[in-house]
Length: 207
Image (cartoon, rainbow, N blue to C red; front, side, top):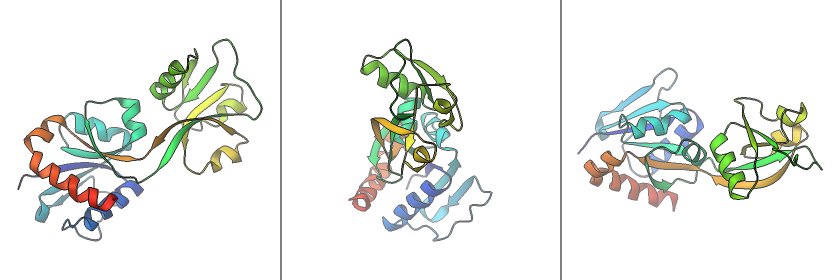
């Protein structure tokens, strides 16, 4: 049995995906001590987990330090790494939308869009024929329309509560997001049987 290295984001996605692996019949300990560990070895299954920041997972997979990984569709669309997308796990479901102050139109000359997702935002507005200026921010995107920095924001939405609390409304639904199982192209060839077996077992759980 070939050894598999799996890169996973820390936190809720790890917990949900790890439980899915248990449900799929993998012999993993029910409880994992995750406080400070970044590498978790499961010798019985010849599996090693790398716990990473969500944006780093596709990077680890592309460079082959992880054979497979779990990454949000938002991260995959934004980073456009050379990885194979194998399966939609249908966990951490949300979507990317544009939002702004109510009853406002976008500036006609180069409207400004604040976002953590410059590539997704630029591609979306290009597709609908809008020329925009992208302002890349890393935190508190909702502030941008309130302080006059941007006409719209493009951000991830799960419940919409954060937008509401900041007096913003949704304007355009851009794309749906969920966690995907991805693979390194070389690992996918070299460890094909092992990876395919994992995918088919996970498929049964996803339904």
